Picture 1 (tube, rainbow, N blue to C red):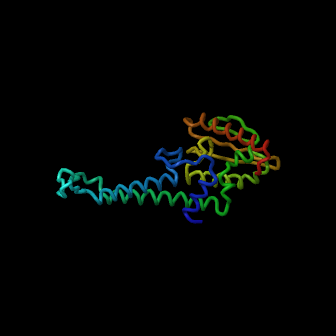
Picture 2: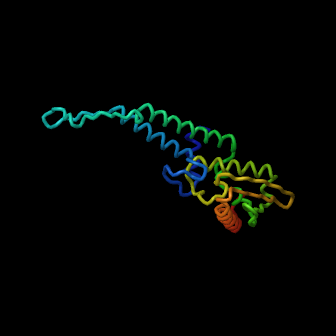
Picture 3: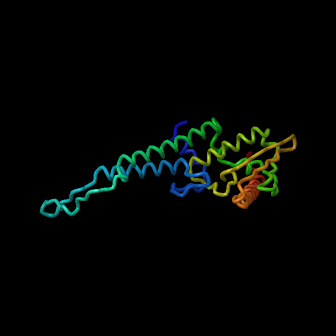
Length: 217
């Protein structure tokens, strides 16, 4: 799948997707944000390349007052092009991680958190949460693979996933299960515990609404 196709997938699948901004998410800038920054750096390089710009007055005489010299060596076209390349490389890395984590998984599946798809309950534990999921989630290994895919999908572009607990940094996840379902333990650094619990409650409420609406899993 091409890079443009992957980013288009995000925009189609995400509800409320917006223009990329420089404000990073919990795990840093997303792929579309890196590309936006790269584009701005390239535009700045072009501006510097064409400066100074001599203008003429009505008589066709160049106005020398508009000809300036930039003495700083840090704001160079080469530096801006280097930064553009860095951001494009970072975007490509996130896209490659998505392809590795999700493979041929349809965007409609990758874009929905497994917690919303299979969640049936949960409680707080020390340092995090315990989430109970139905046996529709498959084996613990299959569930963890779905979670890795969803986390990679969120890093492609800005979506409506600002309340997703799986988008937090520093997650520690373990899963155990049997025929009745899977118990998922998620912990984070202490400073993010309250946010993890808030986001998990949000996803479990969404899971309840999905079940009531008969949404496919």
